[in-house]
Image (cartoon, rainbow, N blue to C red; front, side, top):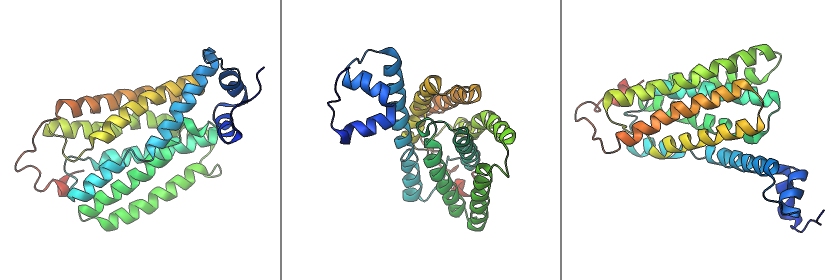
Length: 253
């Protein structure tokens, strides 16, 4: 066995991420082709990248709305459904004790989804409704983490329901784009980041999480986000209808 050569300031975070055993194998012994540790390290690296990406994935969409003061082409119901799925996913994985790198993006994406949904309500003259909805969402999230309120069987059932919820959260947006033949203020950066992020999350789930519910959810997320990404490409150069979007901010759900 080789003597650790990497400085502690670099080695300690690596050990925290991939474990002492794989650090010794991959770094100290420089056995970078050892399949098990290589797969584990790749999964951890991708997972960390997804979590970091989750911190910013919705910011372009947020800035686009703020700059245009318009929510044309964006489905509010998609954000609400996704926000519910974020909260349940976060609570389920936390309570199961899974590694934060396998689900942590749900926290940061959920916060951004909440801000965008509230902003959409404000821009369409429903600020009071937004305030009430925000309080209810935070209360629901608290309840999901509290075992005395939502038991183990119930949280598993709710997580199972997020599987169709993931699809449902994308259908309104997919339908809106299909109907309008235009992507409106939808951020391409967010859409493609979501697609590639969910594809990477599928890999980390296969490697690190022995849970069929999580796996099915990851597969369906890839499919749903893949359809949305394909629409973004197909309607990339489409122009906005002249009349249709004048009052879209007030009508869009």
